[in-house]
Length: 76
Length: 380
Image 1 (cartoon, helix red, strand yellow):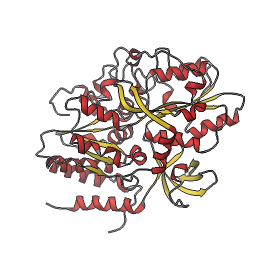
Image 2 (image 1 turned 90 degrees about the horizontal axis):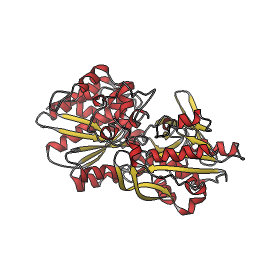
Image 3 (image 1 turned 90 degrees about the vertical axis):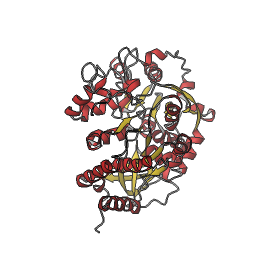
Image 4 (image 1 turned 45 degrees about the horizontal axis):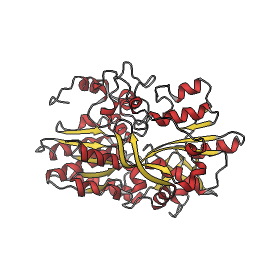
């Protein structure tokens, strides 16, 4: 199942858990799978069945959007 | 140029139309291009945003075996029902509830008195076990790598003795590989699932361009992600090149999530397993290693239900063709009639990741009508 929700870390807790939030909703999630990432409050992570599976890279997101702009504005 | 908000920029209608136009322009000399994706969430994006109506006639986008509920054998659901009969608390993901076996579904078993509870995560199931120390609690864990990794991570912390797991986990890419080895003209290019790939890495798809000459794009789930993936495919297909492309670099690394991969390997071993609608797919099933057999529900409860492959294909159901992209849901005579989300006949209508469910719930009625009348070669 690929249903994933991007959520923002608002609090890091013990036992590899964190409180994450999106659109005003807060949930306790597991960040066990991201224990080797340098997770900070304010980071956006992708949550699937209660676990954060990856950290969203803001720079890459902007780069992706910039490339799309390039494709759209290129006149042959 | 002002920075674009990543929360909304990937679904901006102007950019969607602009990209669709570029795809049509660049694909105009292609005779036919069949792209398969293998994720219910990609089908959701495709239907929800009407992407097929934005694509030119010569590009076909089909849904492959990307719904874990749809490919879960009824045998495993029968195991879950048997456990409920024995009085355990059976913790299950919600979208397994209505999947019917020849003896009914988990929903029916609950109506008959089974203590079946819907959970959102394995952690909820562990909490249930801690909260009910005198009862056995079994977590029915179903899914591909994206769910297998969190389940493996449960073993990173101490587990209560009354907790065990009934696993139904599969690896995604082996099924696609089997299709390429055994089916003619099954696909020209592949869109790889973004969240499975967050776990396994883009590297898990490298063999598709290398061995099978199929361009594979790891894509995110916003509509722009899917359209960009299609454009990347079109450009390479025209030049006769097959390459691996990571479109979802804001989340997916080439090597994936190494911690997740480490724990999947630590907790599970890989064996061939039966996929409903497909048959045995080599090296595709994840089973708890013997070091963890104390928490393996199959061992703890000595489950020994005989396997009946015919039970997986109820009469009249064409789900096994839908999951291979050989039929669209409206081409099934039962679609919308005796098979609906409220009362599903086959598994593709059960889960939110199922192609038929997605078409029924979000499909534009006009598109559904068009596909109902579709004959080979006529305009979609």
